[in-house]
Image 1 (cartoon, rainbow, N blue to C red):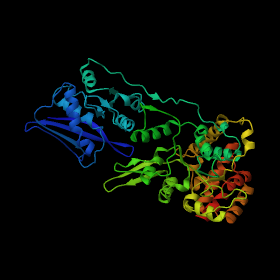
Image 2 (image 1 turned 60 degrees about the vertical axis):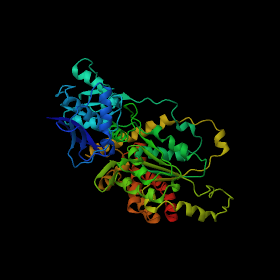
Image 3 (image 1 turned 180 degrees about the vertical axis):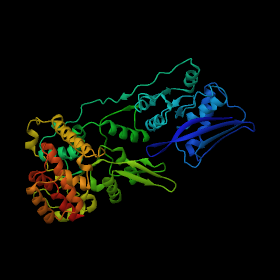
Image 4 (image 1 turned 90 degrees about the vertical axis):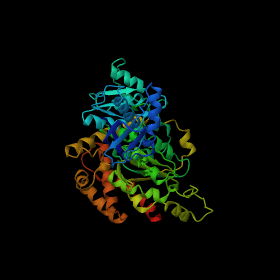
Amino acid sequence: MVQRVATVAFEGIEARAVDVQVQVAPGLPAFSIVGLPDKAVSEAKERVRAALIASGLALPARRITVNLAPADMPKEGSHFDLPIALGLMAAIGAIPPDALSGFTVLGELGLDGSIAPVAGVLPAAIGANARGQGLICPQTCGAEAAWASPEIEIIAAQSLIQLANHFRGTQVLTRPSPKIREFEGTPLDLADIKGQESAKRALEVAAAGGHNLLMVGPPGAGKSMLAARLPSILPPLSPTELLEVSMIASVAGEIEGGALTNRRPFRAPHHSASMPALVGGGLRARPGEISLAHNGVLFLDEMPEFSAQVLDSLRQPLEIGEVAIARANHRVTYPARFMLVGAMNPCRCGRANDPGFACNRAPNVRCAADYQGRLSGPLIDRIDLHIEVPAVTAANLILPPPSEGSRDVATRVARARDIQVERYAARGVPHVRCNAQASGPLLEDVARADTAGAKLLRDAADRMQLSARGYHRVLRVARTLADLDGVATVGRIHLAEALSYRALADDLRRAA
């Protein structure tokens, strides 16, 4: 007789159903796992054997065969331990044979019979709920699985003994409740930054429309401080966005204690990050930093210090909002719609724009051009706002803290985002949630300028030699500026400010 247990295998953030078939047959004692298992799955037999012994059970001296169907799909990860162990327990009569029907099972086993947390519980729970099944998972991951649906049946246990007692009715486990992660410490606030009013304005515009931003300025000007406070003015995640972000974090194993958060992600990788670390990849095609920043912010400090190949790998995800990782035997797609925020010095030493300073390496203009040329023109063209962040003077530091903080700015940003969500929902494109995601005829419809604005844009496009991409990005920024003002029509003043954010891009493109 073959005992069947349902589990999943992950392809990106999709949990594909896997049928674990356990057979205990006469023959020489053996324990075989087939069905394209990786090293972690092949080693499951030793963990299962030790966990069953620790739970007071012994494997029968018979031939045990475990098939993971479909057999041509690669199986990766340690979450196959628990379904294999429960299938064996049902096959030898330790639990009722029908106890596992209607459940998807995943979990890693310790040698003492404990059930350790695994990655991907949330996508597995969502997939099980779609198939009308319940979920059996580690107790630590129960709160995470509870977010899938209030109706799904969830059994979250600490050990195999707890599960056996639950199925016998001697120790009934209660359904876990969803959990929210609480953040400790004082949140960062824009009121901490003295001066830099123009940079704060650009930060507000970027947050309101989901635009990419590049800050250029000398060391110590506050570029990193500004970027670190960007999450404090971003609106919380909507339920749909929360689900998308949490599924990626779950597959990456970055959900702590099963608690989710509605804060937007903020990822700041070091400039030594490799391409697989940034865009995703590796042996198991894990999500990279750009996917972990989905619906949030990817901050690249000292941007020219990143490898040119790594930076150029961002070009396609910035346009289409997803990244496809191709391998010889499979292809995985992860969402990757993020705000790119970069910071850089004007040159290697950072003082090229200081009055009276002469660089020892080369003339200031050449030194700055060599350093800024590390960013390719096509990447620069994909950044909506380019601003200079000047050095802060002692006079600025002596002044009292500004009266306007993150809460006031966040209110205006949230109001502008609400306008955008309503606008695009009314046009039948609810998947477009901010102006940065609008493109083509939709953008030209919502960002139609008045007569004076259209003339200004036409003249500026010729003079600044805007590419088609640059033209549309100016329109997106202008639409966001109009939303911040609460007006329906894009005016000349909005286009003038949007064009001012492209002026620095001309110098950077020439350097590239």
